Length: 146
Length: 439
Ligand SMILES: [Zn+2]
Image (cartoon, rainbow over all chains, first blue to last red; front, side):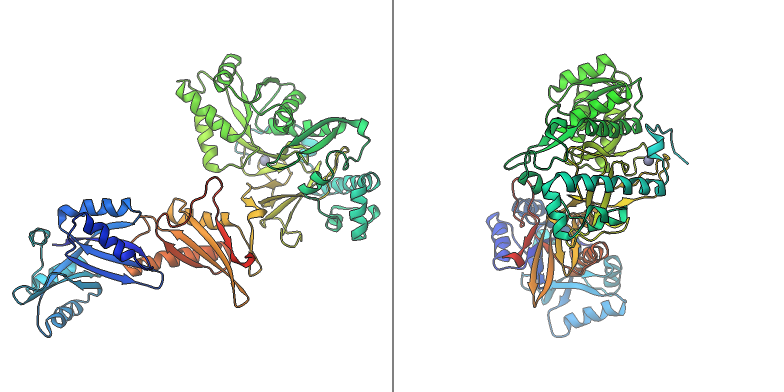
């Protein structure tokens, strides 16, 4: 299953990322994963929070003039050791899929496993392929319980 | 084939062949230029400056040798220094105040009032008005030409005029209902307001009101507004164009085809010019509208620059008129930017943004000169619709806007997507352009 992610449009200038972090932090919203993508002129910050914190987070961001949207991503576990990520990527490549972006959870690995957030060219197919190869995918409820 | 029945007030003039019309225009132009040269020191000085004598002007083709007139000329020669007839021949004054300084005024001889009345009679007839109709005039009756224009036109037709002037909307509606007014003359924004009020009062057009058509002008409006007015009032909404300097409302008018405004070309010659160079442009091209009056005697105008941007077409209209038509006013030359030699209007960019995203996002145009070449940056405030989660998506949005602007405006621009509310808002008219070349 997919999990939910918040994406926020950022102007490429000093202080905006800090402001987003502060806005969410002051509201006691716990960022469990975060990644920034940027170009010369703008950036997109992607954030994972617990399900019940999504709407409050969106409200705060929009109230402060940010454009934010919720979308679906996959949270997959890989072995936290050399070649762990490489083997996951090999499976994706073999299936003819591509990675649009990927980042890791802020929470450290547990039990020798690391969690990766992925957006694939075809998410549904990705879920099937992972299932086939025994790659564990986290549900939203599991994220919420972390 | 006409799509509906068309009434024409003066078929001999409105439907003459284009060749006949050009011959008529040439003869009247020559007479008018002679009158101007002989009676108005300013015209004489300007023509002498250009080395043009009245004898040089024999046909419409010679128009291009004549100097232009500007609104500032009417201020500079205020109030009577542009009269081409003796002061005693002037029977009427109209004018507009403008926003700053002195008003401008125009003097009308009895002939000029007749010319104008004829224009408005044609205008009303084209909207379906006959002797049987009741014409409700909500344009102000005063120095402003709107009210008098409609009144005189209806008078000429022999229709019943209700000269309400502006204000007191409830009373206007009561009179409209009691008298059974069939034709409405007012600004499009007032027509919308009237329509909304009528609906709020629980009145139903067609049942409680007998309105069938309206001539709406004195301010620019859109096709969306036309549909809204037609729905609210149950009328055919026709656009009219005019300006005091040339005559008043009725210089150009729409027929029921509603496909551009017919210009009363037997009284005025219309040109489209490149506002930057003053050079004449062919039919179909967008540029500044310029009028030359050829039948007025009080205060004739030679190549008067309206600063309105539109196109002209002389394609035959389904209504049977041969008079050329002007399209809607799409902008003002005052807003025009010249970028690498290309004329660019903020309204064109706005059209592109509306057509790509359905709504008009806030935008700002930033013009600069880098290595002696002009650059145009278009900053567009992002809307939630435009936002996607990947860099690829955002780049595609940016590229799409860039390509659309290139195809409409004809120049390459740098499009930047900026966060909402990051472009400063101004009270009143939005500031859309920062031209750093002038700083
Ligand atoms: Zn027509």
